[in-house]
Structures are given as structure tokens and as C-alpha cells.
Length: 466
Ligand code: ADP
Image (cartoon, rainbow, N blue to C red; front, side, top):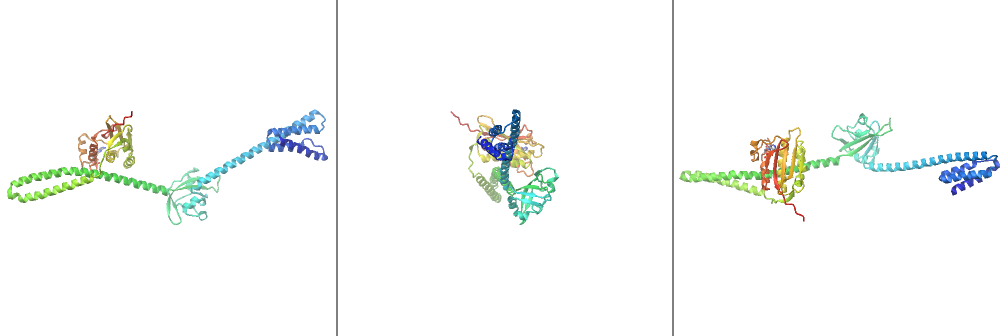
């Protein structure tokens, strides 16, 4: 308001100065209103207009009232229009400043984000126009040394035409191989992935921005994971081999003892033959000694193999099976089979020796996967259910050929196999493990159409809460 009064006061003074030159009406008052509009808001501007009209009416004698009113209305209309233009310009200026602030913030954010990403921009002919510090580090080059060189020198096989061929404005750039190879000045190469984007609005000198990713670490991690998988698989196979050797020792022990008994019986007969049988008796004695020695070696081997104290613990059946996830993935991947788990995880606390139990599960699952290997939609499911207060049942089911009725007894015998590389020990080892857990390994026809191997584990009574 004060501004309006001062501005109008100034205009009156200016007008008085001009009086020597002639008679002025409203014209000297116009700047007072415009200045007020530029610096203040509507109420102050309205006051400036009103004061200007009042001063003019007081100072300029008019011939008629209508003349005075028309001039006042004209002055008010014109100056208000000028004021509106001022305000519009001011709002536009504020908006422009606001937008450039936002743009600067976005620019700073983009620069920060891109600082760690190697980016190279190319001319339309594939020559390097610019590369940011991260890209310079990646290729062990300075920007100066890189500028103007064809990007194909840094990524052999790169062709700028591939970026425009599809008509898309950007995306991943496929390489002939699984990935691109970056080339450093010392000849070292590294795996690389390239994302491109055509920079808009740069037709003619149209250029392309390439966003690069160094895949070295990813490749190293992948190789390490594969190595670990292979090692894990080996450990499981070795463990299985240990179990198999124990079973083998058990199986061999019986015929050896029987042979020793037969030899002993024949020695008794030979004794009856008198001196004639003496030589044969001594040879039989030597043979019996060797058989007993073989028996001792086998017993020693069994003792060694069962050296680890195997203690039953309370375990959760679902967790013992779920922990085998990576092994199942690996076993399944070899035949392209996804192994599905369908486990009841409530009240699944059982008595088990974790490693032995898991070994049995691996054996059954491996057999199931091998059985469905040539099916068009192979299925292997591991089902776990609480079947009574005392038992939790586990079954490994598949949609393979199943087991013929007359084969059911045979397959559990050691050395029975239908596979060219099979040892025929997996099922007998598994049966031994299941029996040591107080269960019985059974085979039936699965609802999936193939075999279902199942057994039960003793449940740990759940703790009663009062
Ligand atoms: P291996 O796997 O070395 O042959 P196993 O004792 O584990 O030894 O299995 C014996 C045989 O039982 C196998 O050769 C196979 O013929 C049969 N068998 C085992 N599991 C299955 C199954 N899920 N489906 C069909 N046949 C099976």
C-alpha cells in the first residue's frame, strides 16, 4: 500500500515538472501503476489506480462529467491490462526459474548415477565421441586417446549398424557369442554387456550412447558357484560310496563265513581219510586261514566305515528335505526335471540321523529322476505327511515306467541294476538306512503313473503346553 502511495506521489511530482511543457492528463500516472504492479499485488495496484484517478480529477479541470468519467475508466482499463501483463510475465519468470532448478537437480542426480556406470557416446559412423571416467577406467584408456577411434577397436565385432537395424531407440545389444569382449591396450580381454540408446534430436550427426557392464565379477561368481556345485555332488557321491562299501562288506561277510564253515566240514571228512588226506587237510587249512583273514579285513573295513558315531536326533523332516534343495536342483538339471516338494511342515519333528536320512533321500530321488529322464513331461514329487500320532510318512514318486510286480523283491538286492553304469547298491543302502531308523522301505505304484518309494519315520511327541 505504501508503495502505491509513494509511486503515485512520485508520478504527481513528475507531472508537475512536465507542466511547463504542456498539459498532461493521465499519461504521467501510468508508470506509477505499472511499477506498483511489478513490485506488489492486486490490492496495492488497485489503490495506485484509484489514487491516480483521484489526483487527476482534482488537478485537471474538465469540461464535462462524462468526459472525466470516460477518461478515468479508460485509464483504469488500460493500466489494469498492463498490470495483468506484468503479473503474467512475473509468474512465467518464476515458473522458468523453478523448472531450471528442477532440471539442475535432475541433471545432478543423473550425473551421480551415471558416474559409476561406464558410458560411451559414438558418432553416427561408430567413432568414439566421448567416454566418461568409468568407461575410461574400464578400458584403461584416457578420453583423449579414445576419442575418434572406432568403438569396434575396443569391442571387437561391434557394428554401429546393429543399433539402428531393428528400428528401436534402444535396448540390449546382442553379441554373436554369449557376451561381448572388451579389449584393453595391453591385450587383456574382459566379458562385457552393452545397452544402447539412440540420442534423440541428433539426426544427421545422430549419435548413440552405450551403457556398458563389466561381467568379469559375475562370470567369476558363476564359475565359483558351478565349481561348488560340482564339489557338493562329489561329496554326496563319495558319501554314497562309503555307505555302499559298508553294505558290500556286510554282504560279502556272509558267503565268506559260509565258505569257511564248508571248508571246516570238509576238513572233518578229510581227517577220516587218514594219512592220505593229510596234504589236502593242510591245503584246506591254508584256504580256511585266507578266508578268515578276508573276513577280518572286511570286518575292519566295516568298523572303519561306521567309525562316525551316528546318533539319532530330533529333526524336522521338512527342513531336512528342504535343505537338499540345491542337490535336488543339480540332480534334476542333469535330466531337465524339476523336483517338486509337497511337505506337511506342521508337527514334523522326527527321530533321525540327518546325514544318513538325507543320503537315503538323495538315492531315491536320483533313481526317480533317472526313471523319468525320457518322459516328455517328467514329474518327480517328494511328499511328506503326518500319518499318525507316531509316524511321519515320506514318499518319492515319479511318472516313470514303475517297477514290475515280479521285480519288486529283486531290486532291493545288492548288485541288481538295469542301468549300464549302475552299481545296484542304492536301494539296498537306502533300505539299510530306513531300517536303522525303525522303518520299512516299500515300493508301490504312484498316482503319477510310475514308482512310489515310501517309508515312515518315528515322530517325536509334540511338547504339551499347559
Ligand atoms: P542303480 O541305481 O545303481 O541301478 P539301485 O539299487 O538304486 O541301483 O536301483 C536298482 C534298480 O531298481 C535300478 O537299476 C532300476 O531298475 C530300479 N529302480 C530304482 N528306482 C526306480 C524308479 N524310481 N523307477 C523305476 N525303476 C527303479
